[in-house]
Structure formats: C-alpha cells, structure tokens
Amino acid sequence: MKTIAALPDGYTVRPAEPADAEALFDMLAAYNTAVVGYADTTLTEVAYCIDRPGFDRMIDGWLVLAADGLPAGYGTALGTGDRHLIDIEVAAKDPEVAAWLVDRTTQRAQEMGRERGHTEVTVDAFVCRTDEPLRAQLSDHDFTAGTSFHRMRIDHTEPAVTPDSPVGVVVRRGAFDDATRWAAHEVLNESFRGQFGWGETPHEAWLERLDDVPIFEWDQLTLLEVDGRAVAIRMCNDKYVETENCGHIGMLGVVEEFRGRGLAKFLLHDAFALDAAIGRAGTILHVDTNNPTPALGLYLSVGMNATVVFDGWRRVVPVA
Image (cartoon, rainbow, N blue to C red; front, side):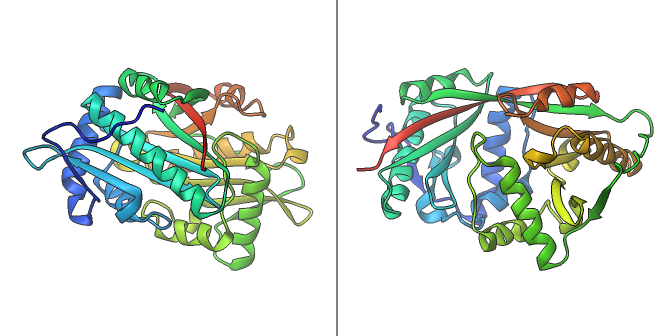
C-alpha cells in the first residue's frame, strides 16, 4: 500500500464537527459537480453523516483544511456489523490529499478489524466512474474494481397505473411495530446475503440507524407476504426529493425461493404509481450489475435507464 507519511505542506487535519456541515457541503458539492455535473448531496445529508449512529467522528473521520481554513478534503471509515467489512469514502481535489485520505481510512479499517480480533478486513470504496483521479489513487493503494453500480431512473411524464397485487400476496405498508420490523430486517438479510458490499447489522443497530436517518420514515417500508411469511421488501426514502424531486427506492429485495414470480416488478410499478401520484418527477434506484438476480434487465424492462455509473473498489487488508 502506498503510504503517505504526512499531509502536504499547508494542510491541517482534524475531526469534522457539526458546525462544519455547511462548509463541508460546499466542498463536497463542488467536488461532485466536477465529477458528475451536479452537487449530488444536500446539506441535510452532510450534517447527518458527520455524526450518524455507528460512526465516531473523532476517530473515524478526517477533515482536511487548506491554509485559508476551508475544507479541502474529507475521508471516513464506516464499519458494518462486526467490522469484517469497512466502507471508506474519500473526496479531495488535491491528489496528494486524496492519497493521504485513502491511506488513513484504510489504516483505520485495519484498526477496526484489530479491535474485533480479525485477521483481515475487507475495505470497499464506491467511486463514480468519471472520477479518474480517485480511481487512480485506489489502484495505487492496491484496490481493484469488483463490480459496478448503475443509478437507474424513470421519469413520470404522466400518471402511472397502480398495479394489481399478485395473486396470493398480501401487501403490508409501513412498519410500525416490532414484529414487522423484525420481519423486514430478516427479509433484507435473506435477500442480500452474499452480495457485494452487504454486511449484516445487529437488529438494534439497524433500528437505531434507520430511526436517525432524516430522509426515512417507517411508512416508506413495504413488505409482501405469502402464507403469512414476509418474502419481499421495498424501502423508499427522500434522498432525491430536494435535489431532483424524485422518489428513491433504497432497497428492493426478494428472498431466493420466491424470485421469478413478479414480486419485484410489482413493487417497482407500485412505487412508480405512488411517486407519480404525489407529483414526483421520477423514481431513482441503484443496481449492482453483478447482482446474482437479473436485476438490471428487470429495471430496463420497466422503463428505467442508467444515468450514472459507479464502481465498487475492494481490497482485503491483513490486520496483523
């Protein structure tokens, strides 16, 4: 791994504080605009991420400041579950600052693994394909591209038709009690176990995280049941309401033995109809193109199109 002994001259580093949210948003919005053409984040999202559940801003994040005191880079390491899997995020215009942040976040991932007694950890980074400088930094640090994600979108230019529920399927809207939330969490784990970047989170930690997310409410969760068993899930949120006036399907999963019955297609058309009815311009979701299910083909078949491509970069790092 390329090691950066110190930040370049003129830069300092410290943990981000809630009061930094506005200045950090300005930096990230400018960075994203250079990469994808628009801000692709909000002040609310940035403020939440500085101090979210499961993230210790004092040891898991690094705010790099330029000589004028303004943010010039930001990096985070976020552990999932028992910290076998660590997600890192890095944003910095200066390549030397970016290199330092990649190195430091990866070192923190090693520390997380050591704290849990692991011999190695898997470190993931999700990077826009057009962000060539950061892709180069990850390659220099021995990361390899493992999969790609497409941001899919459908525009609602006219009212969407509300689909009929599949025969034998009960639609449960909202998760307002403990039993429903347990069932939802189990369906998520069953549906996504083994997929790139998926790490199972203890139930209480999962609840705490969702309760704290400012863009999610429990009435945005939908379950499909067959013979009293929850077998499919859709979790929506307001991530793209402020920036694009679009609904967002954050998670869509069907347990393996119930795939191929049209459940995912129903959940998609149902979401489109709900979004169109409240005046959303479109609906957005992300799909792993190496998903073991033919998900990309499904989304294309219902009229969605890719707007941005991200790559999932991965490195397995020894802890000892």
